[in-house]
Amino acid sequence: MSPKPPLPLYLTGPTGSGKSAAALLLAEATGGEIICADAYQVYQDIPLLTAQPSPADQARAPHHLYGSVPLSHEMDAAHFERAALAAIADVQSRGHLPIVCGGSGLYIKALTHGLSPLPPGDPQLRLELERLSPTQLAARLLQLDPGSAAQLNLQNPRHVTRALEICLLTGQPASALKQSWAMARPGVRGVFLDLPRDVLYDRINARTLAMVAEGVLAEVAALPEDTLSATASKTLGLWDFRAVADEATSLPEAIASVQQATRHYAKRQSTWFKRETAFVNLPLSPLDSPAEVAENIRRIFGLRTNRALLPRP
Image (cartoon, rainbow, N blue to C red):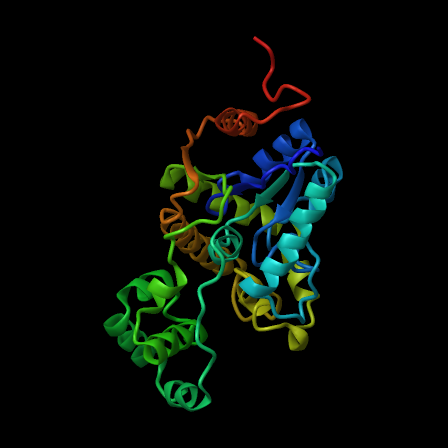
């Protein structure tokens, strides 16, 4: 009888929490392979903007789905689910551990719980909603679905309009339909890396500065604006750094804006994953090294390794 394929290991957390570094060490120690679960790291041509693993890191262990989607293509949780399940099955077929690494909550929920059935768009209702100003849309969503309003960027009319559309077509809060965590699929195991907020925010601020030092302005300036999909165009920092290239804003202003938007995104990620009771919450100290984080994960799940993650005492 052939051995059962290894169950996927989900390694999640807010942006800047150290997921990629821990996943890489675990992949090296277990012979595992890393699968991207980040809505923007799947895109081509923006590795710096999305903090994709470097070519050197990707050479240390197999990585899947990173930089695999053209910027002109739309991506959503359903498309991701199909691609990720295929990648997981491919890794398992070789007897290797799939390490699903990322912080896009709905993408990971697609794998761990399946997607909630949401109504298709209604053209007439959408036309009515699009006549409202962003302020009116936000006010109506706050009235009908405070849960969605707390999780969305209320300045993004596309997201607010879709949440309102779901509420009005189903008679239920969009937040309840989108984020039902009642039943995980069998065999789900994973961790959420939980850093103190001040430490996380310091890391986010520093990483934004590092992006600039590494050349993100040139990367963004080279993008063909007219062919970006709606999904790709929402990448954090894209338009802030593009405005610098277009001399519409200063670099310090863009950096501050990107840092703030990323901190807000990290807060929403933490709120989302608190609903995922199938994952182990792993509190981290600011002094924990990536090797110590990886070793803690190894111990929690009893993973077999071919090398020590920490030096022998």
